Image 1 (spheres, rainbow, N blue to C red):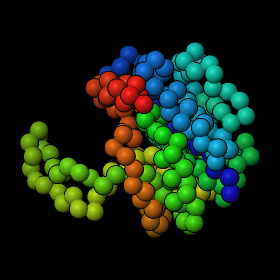
Image 2: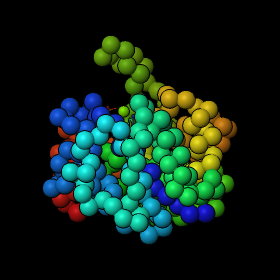
Image 3: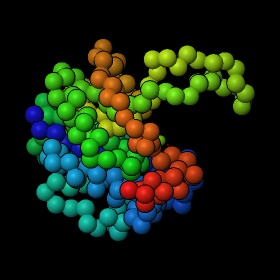
Length: 227
Ligand code: CTP
Ligand code: MG
């Protein structure tokens, strides 16, 4: 089947402390999300990239006037949770002709360090998978269970991975999984797991982090400028 990218970009970026949604904060000379979308548009295997905005978004057209064309799609159907945004985006992909057996690669707008090669590696790794997979990183740090700012206990980090994006699944299966999973899931793989499937973990780079906290903007800026 074909492969489409779906970029949830309807969040408000509360933890970032910025004066606007973090995807629009200027990083290395461009709005953060411009870097994300440039990486996806540079992957020839992706038929189109759909950005899903909040219906109230007042930034996109001014921030990214160059994002339009055959392979650059925009929808204003984002929801109150990431899962709702992705579910609405999948409906939009199908309304635009994507089919249930086509692949979708869901990628956070806020992961602006994405490299096209990593997307290609994920697509290649999942090509023969029945279900799909995701970029992820084995945990390096020791994991603590916190209680009121103190470390209460230590969790076993062996066999633990930090999930990144893109996460690549069949559009039809992901729609079904999200409908059953509800609003609480914070990634696609957890909804797929709840159906009893085991998505492939494809080892990724620490560089593919999600801009989340105030200090992350400067780190993203340094990494982007050093490329
Ligand atoms: N997202 C979305 N719709 C939502 C919530 C999040 O499309 N209702 C998107 C964000 O725009 C982001 C991605 O999901 O690109 C990952 O979510 P996160 O890093 O949590 O972003 P925010 O929810 O915007 O940030 P915060 O949780 O700090 O408010
Ligand atoms: Mg969030």
